[in-house]
Length: 241
Ligand SMILES: Nc1ncnc2c1ncn2[C@@H]1O[C@H](COP(=O)(O)OP(=O)(O)OP(=O)(O)O)[C@@H](O)[C@H]1O
Ligand SMILES: [Mg+2]
Image (cartoon, rainbow, N blue to C red):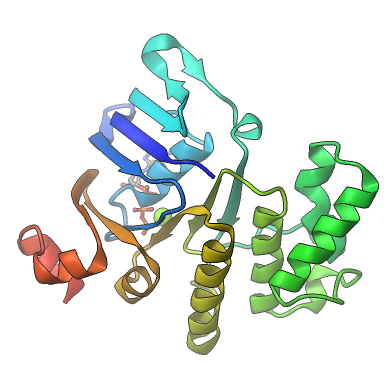
């Protein structure tokens, strides 16, 4: 597991500035949510950790490793960052059964077959899908499909798990259960997690710390209790009420 750090990271698309020199550090083993209204830059920030977007300026670290710095022309590609990712659209492959979907990151890493079987069965049990490995995705419910995506994100023991609104397609009851399950799994592995959401209930119930963003800026980065007790300005106060 690893820390994640941004040092004065900005992102612009042509003339539009999306992120304004943001700096923060997420500690090893910490569960952090990026919280803020639509368009504030949460997904863009997460995608830069993943290597799915390039920052325009600034430095990004995973652990002690500098993974992106345009000034040095340095950009470590996604496949070499050793991350797990779970998105809102489950993005599991319809033509592969559950086992093969979850095994995919291990196959890419050319892990031996016996190790793949063992790890896939283990992680499927952890997300409560033990016994479903030969089923096809279209025979699973939305919640089960998202568990497959979660299992795939976890199976290679990533340095950091990145989640972007992973529960927004699920009904309220299932969402609540999944929140608990994700948090339990995170604590079980003492895994660094970044969780993007615009749902404050979700952020406040799951996170060690919350980073509140607005219009490409970080307004506050603190524990839920600190934010409730001492919101950094009117926007934060209104947003969390
Ligand atoms: N490829 C792109 N080209 C131009 N602008 C973009 C591009 N991708 C994102 N943006 C803009 O960057 C801003 C931040 O987008 P981002 O997806 O990070 O928001 P978000 O906080 O994740 O919002 P949401 O809660 O709606 O998912 C938005 O104004 C968006 O329109
Ligand atoms: Mg988003």
